[in-house]
Amino acid sequence: MHLIVRAYIDTGEPVGSRTLSRLGPLALSPATIRNVMADLSDAGYLSQPHTSAGRIPTEKAFRDFVASVEPRAISPADRDRIVNQIQNGETLEDRVAIAARVLTEVTKNVGIATAIPATAQELDHIELIGLADRRILMIVVTRDQRLQNRVISLDQQLSPDELGRLRNYINQNFSGWTLERARAELLRRIEEERATYDAVLQQLNLLYRKGLLLADQDARVSLDGASYLVGLDLHLTRERMRDLFRALEEKSRIVALLDRFLESSGGEVRVHIGLEDAHPAMRELALIGINVDLPSGLRTRIAVLGPMRMRYDRVMRAVLEIGRTFEILQI
Image 1 (cartoon, rainbow, N blue to C red):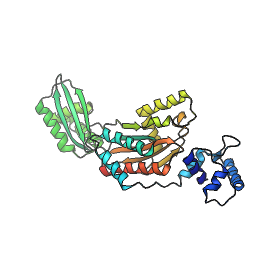
Image 2 (spheres, rainbow, N blue to C red):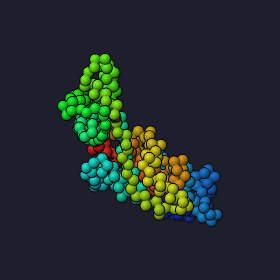
Image 3 (cartoon, rainbow, N blue to C red):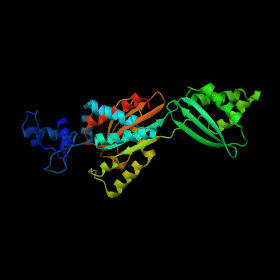
Image 4 (cartoon, rainbow, N blue to C red):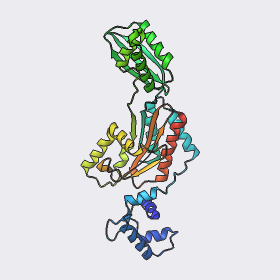
C-alpha cells in the first residue's frame, strides 16, 4: 500500500496495477496486484474515481503511510541558510515572518510560524515615564528582549522622583522573576502592607490596577505561500475557496488551528491528515508541525499546510530544522 501512496505523491495520477508492476520490488503479476488493490479498497485504504481508472489513496492510507515516514536529512548548506536567515531578523516579528517564508521556499506549500508569549516570561526591567495629563508610559522589558508598552491615566500626578522610586522597587525586587509570579507577589505585598500606609506600595497599587506586569499574550503570526493552494485540485467551489482564504487571513483562526493539532506535540513533529474538523474546506489538506517551548517563556509553533499529496519526509525535516533553529538561537 505504501508503494501506491508514493506513486500517487510522485505523479498525482490514479495508480494502476500495471504501473505498480513496473515499479518493483513487487514480484507479482498485474492480476495479483489488482486483487490486492481490491482488498485495500474494501478496507477503506483506496478509492477509485472511475471504473476503468486506477486507485487513489484515501485519508486512511495517508495516515498509515505517514506513520512510517522518517524526516529526510537536509544538507549542511541548507541548514546554515535557515539559521542565518532567521538569525538576521532584528525583531521577533521579523524572525517569525522569515521562518514562514523559508518553510514556503523549501516545501512549496503554505508556511506558518507563530510566537506565543507564555506566562513564564521573565522580567528584565521596567521603565516608568511621566506624560502630560497625569498619564504614564509603562515599559516592560522581558528576558527574551521583548518590549511591552502601555500608556495609563491616573487620578493623581506622580513626580519623576516618585516614578523613579517605583521603578527601582520593581527592578530590585522582581528582576528575573516570571511576570505571573512577580505580579502575584506584588499583590500579596500590597495587601499585606495596606495597614502600614507604605507610600511606595500604595502608588504601586495604582499601577497594578492599571495592568503593571501583565504578560503580553498577543501572538505573532505569519503565514506565507497561500497562493500555492490555488493550484491544487481540492474539489472546492469558488465560494468555499474564498471561505478558506478568509480563514487563513484571520490570525485567531490560525492560532486555533495550531492549538488544536499541535498542543500535545511535546517538541516532536506531528502530522495531521484531513482537517475538515477545523474548517470544511480543509478536508483534503494536511498539517505538519512542531511545538517548541523556549526557556524565555516563548512558545513557537512551526507548521506547513499543504495537500495530502506532499513529500512528507522533506516537509517534516524542514519543520524540524526550523524548530531547532528557534531553540538554538533562544529567540
